[in-house]
Image (tube, rainbow, N blue to C red):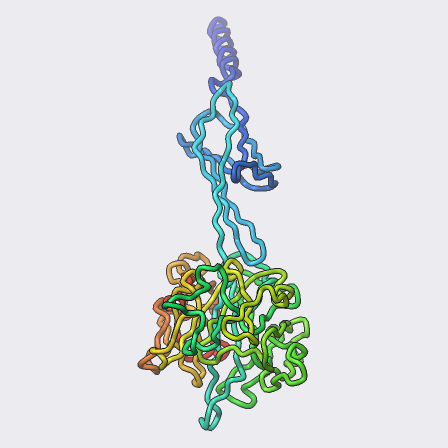
Length: 439
């Protein structure tokens, strides 16, 4: 019995000794450096992940000066990093992936090369310029134009340096001196025209994810008090193109009445008139409307060196660089098929949308059905069977949103909408029967 006990004690001691032995593959230190364009991307706090190719083990570490450090068992791993930065309205997405082999007794320092892509989440959600019928249907009323900008992403963006412009000629069916032999002369020169003044924000403006901002182009007042078919632009959260000093004493008061008292003066946009006239002559029927982003647009629009006078020696346009353009919509006059001509080159907007004016119709962006349905938070919140288009009331030019999703009803139901953005107005927009501000 005594010998058995002694044997068991010896065996236990042997087991204890074997448990304390150093593993055959002890953990080793691994260093991963994020690289961009051949140089270390020396930022702190970026998450780098390691996933074993042999089992389900995974690890994460954050960078210090662009370097992430791990302690792992030797083997085969996949290293990945994915993150996003936002500057103004531009999101830059960084992605990197690499297969690495971690060894014992060697130097386990690796480089993870990052690739980048840029997205611009700021889009024109809606443009309303065509006016509506007067109460007695004796004519139309058109001093109630507005535009809605939308953050088409899940990250907050700064739109403080965003400005508003239109390409000339103002109407799509007007004579276009920029077209020579069927081509826009500026298409190969890297710019598009902006006539005849540019509007910009005069304060810090940010836009939350999947949210919008309304800018009154004409009259930041409640137009429905006089014309019931019109829209109410008096909400205190709205912004207003209102700078009568820019147009002098003869500014058009019908276009620029005193804004609603609810709208703070910090929400008034500013402009500089480098052309002629008493109001911003954006087309009611067929604007080539766009938004741009440039921090010093005020000084740029005042500099004669940036003007082009091809159309009129006394009425210059500003040459806006293509890379500043964030979004655009090209509108054609309904019924002028033989005369309508493009003002945007294909790299700005490859298509166009017909517009029937005077009936309260509006140009509204289509929903990206696949992307919107893919958002997990939208489960049970999307409203289908959209009937808000003009396909049933305008046999010639009417159309609707092919996604079938009722964007406004879905938003009211708590959904996040991702709108279609292909830089082609023919695919991205439809003519909505009622301005969205009237629901």
